[in-house]
Image (cartoon, rainbow, N blue to C red; front, side, top):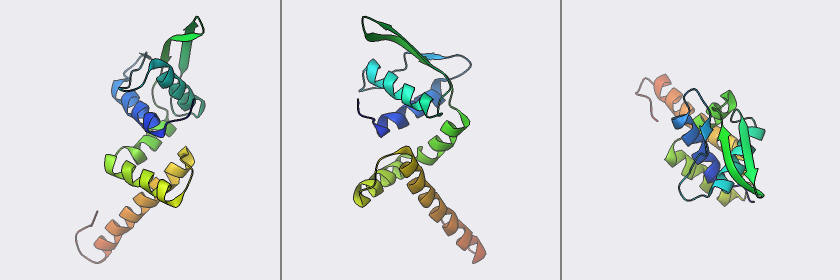
Length: 133
């Protein structure tokens, strides 16, 4: 199964929204089947972005699965990609530059956008004006 970075983002957003104190069972994301969502949750768990991933299988198919909360790393990554506009810019930049669509590349491009925005704010303050986003 091919990794889908849009689905990765959607899962992180949904886990953040739904997690309270107990595991989330059979997380659903519109447009994706259970096996695909579960596989991507397993990837996120293995990468250290979500706590806990447990799955049960019956007849060689996933029967049920659960995930825990976002880790610190998962929260930090989500903050960088949460904004829809920034997410679109990140994806377009990766495509235009022919860069691999990996978590590390997404973080690098997101960091560059965030740094540029912060420098704009800093320059605005240093010049005695109002900060520019």
